[in-house]
Image (cartoon, rainbow, N blue to C red; front, side):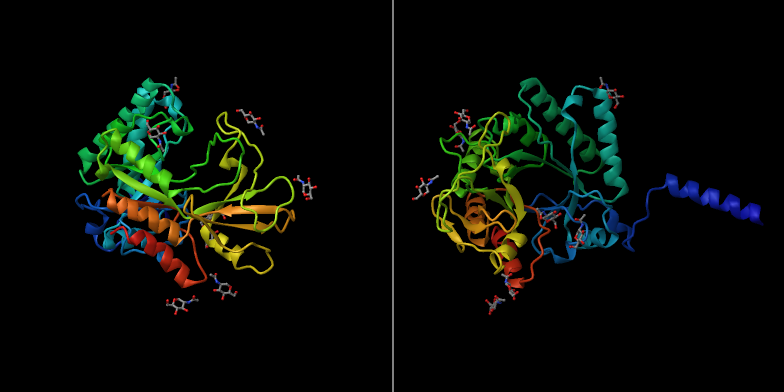
Length: 369
Ligand SMILES: *[C@@H]1O[C@H](CO)[C@@H](O)[C@H](O)[C@H]1NC(C)=O
Ligand SMILES: *[C@@H]1O[C@H](CO)[C@@H](O)[C@H](O)[C@H]1NC(C)=O
Ligand SMILES: *[C@@H]1O[C@H](CO)[C@@H](O)[C@H](O)[C@H]1NC(C)=O
Ligand SMILES: *[C@@H]1O[C@H](CO)[C@@H](O)[C@H](O)[C@H]1NC(C)=O
Ligand SMILES: *[C@@H]1O[C@H](CO)[C@@H](O)[C@H](O)[C@H]1NC(C)=O
Ligand SMILES: *[C@@H]1O[C@H](CO)[C@@H](O)[C@H](O)[C@H]1NC(C)=O
Ligand SMILES: *[C@@H]1O[C@H](CO)[C@@H](O)[C@H](O)[C@H]1NC(C)=O
Ligand SMILES: *[C@@H]1O[C@H](CO)[C@@H](O)[C@H](O)[C@H]1NC(C)=O
């Protein structure tokens, strides 16, 4: 008898290993890739596997999975039921772009991952510098090959590509083949943040993370290349930058905050001098009576909110630049009037004590539709 049980265990183990996981949603139909025609998108980047109950499920169309934990069954079944695609963030090492063996293995792995977890595609998030046009073409070819492999299994799988905020000027040395990438994928997700990564001005001062006028100019540059508006998603930040101000004689009303030099890709004036902070934490800081601050301000040049405060640990002046419903609304209105494919957010895992704050932030994005 013991012997039989042992055999039974071995056989069931073998079956479980060879068969992928069973559909956890009670109905196998729910575990098929979502077969939804191209539509306007609201792509939310998710970095925490447990916050999904708080998302605005009515308006999200795609969730980018940027965490290592497995996707919870409840999230999977909820997304399938509500018609929201789940796509994995996909990173490919640039130094292997000419290695066909590696490419074939990688594409198979990604396809296997997506199929075995009943998800809906990939979001390419290669943010490395690529200055050689040959390598840029190879990256486009990788995306095209991945897209073909997925689409030949199911034409409704979604493949998107994250790109920097401007197609000109090789932002952050990403001289990618933007036109090629837009044709090789379903759409580009234009990352309209970290826009102060390299600033060539005389004085190095704290500034807005995502100024609407530059977001517009960057987006227009994509369309000037001939990229269809329907292939462009505007991704906006739900985070800001906390900058230390150097020098003396600051008051909480001083506008100009001189920041320490820090080298980013050969430029010594960069948002790398600041620290990224989530919007929910920023609002908690503003509301925290133990932190001396100059009150919420609006900069009309960069159409963004900011405030000065005294850092609790160092006792020195800091300046916070961020986005709120007011600045987000300006940009979402641009996205809508340009008739872009959609909007997006890095990241949607902010939790608020105040439900009004939460609904205003989601509402700013929802106004795209
Ligand atoms: C996700 O969020 C929960 C609740 O806010 C938190 O306890 C947990 O540490 C977070 N997980 C990660 C990996 O940050
Ligand atoms: C090419 O990729 C294969 C498979 O990952 C790997 O074994 C090999 O070392 C790679 N070749 C080079 C030159 O990196
Ligand atoms: C847009 O393209 C023009 C022409 O190539 C360039 O001068 C400009 O710096 C680009 N970026 C923005 C944000 O305007
Ligand atoms: C700060 O203000 C004092 C008094 O106005 C002045 O003497 C000093 O030069 C100022 N220091 C700096 C660094 O501007
Ligand atoms: C930053 O670099 C510029 C030249 O690129 C140089 O003139 C300037 O002195 C540098 N500033 C600091 C604070 O290192
Ligand atoms: C921002 O929030 C996300 C999700 O809760 C968390 O993983 C991350 O650590 C937070 N970042 C900061 C700087 O607090
Ligand atoms: C500010 O703090 C108060 C008291 O702790 C709290 O009731 C309120 O919800 C907070 N407001 C925001 C915007 O977080
Ligand atoms: C939330 O919004 C409602 C309606 O605008 C308002 O009556 C209420 O006071 C707000 N609550 C907070 C905590 O701000």
